[in-house]
Image 1 (cartoon, rainbow, N blue to C red):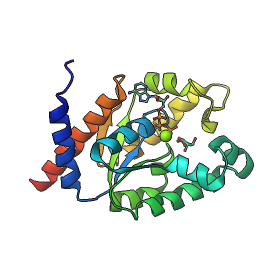
Image 2: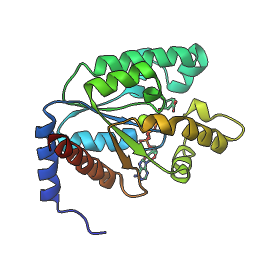
Image 3: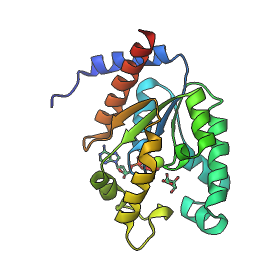
Length: 195
Ligand SMILES: Nc1ncnc2c1ncn2[C@@H]1O[C@H](COP(=O)(O)OP(=O)(O)OP(=O)(O)O)[C@@H](O)[C@H]1O
Ligand SMILES: O=C(O)C1=C[C@@H](O)[C@@H](O)[C@H](O)C1
Ligand SMILES: [Mg+2]
């Protein structure tokens, strides 16, 4: 594949930033889909602030996510996640990467749908499993058969993620290329809405 012309790439990002008129962009999807890494690159391109709900929760609690799950339990983590996302969505001009379970919560999902444009970064299980296997920082996957657990989460969650405004394939290509795909997909979505 040829590399996109940097000037064209920049022009598309500037066009998108203007068309969005401040509306937040929210990345949803499974752990390992690339929400954090792609979101960061997307924010740079759009000259926006980047926030990550997992990082915000860790900062507020002064603990890592595995520690929060262990010491306070998943329900408290989920309550914190909903609060953090509600707070972040009061700000314009933000790119928000959510934790994998955030969009599954009906209240959080309604808030995201109301305030932001949501993008599902959708990836195949092989890609997800390879990526999440690099680090043991996902408490939900600390099971006897993490691949089967991941598959079960995919089965449960994909119909819900499909409610996002836009779906972008998180392919096995450099993260910058996926960020470019997101720019193109959101532009196409806005053009379709204007038509
Ligand atoms: N396009 C890509 N190519 C190669 N590696 C990638 C790509 N996108 C993400 N990764 C790698 O996959 C891992 C998981 O990515 P990331 O942390 O961004 O996922 P996430 O969707 O934010 O997951 P979580 O829901 O657990 O926060 C990281 O090590 C990241 O560097
Ligand atoms: O998929 C999930 O439910 C999670 C994903 C991570 O981003 C973290 O929010 C946490 O590990 C839970
Ligand atoms: Mg993340």
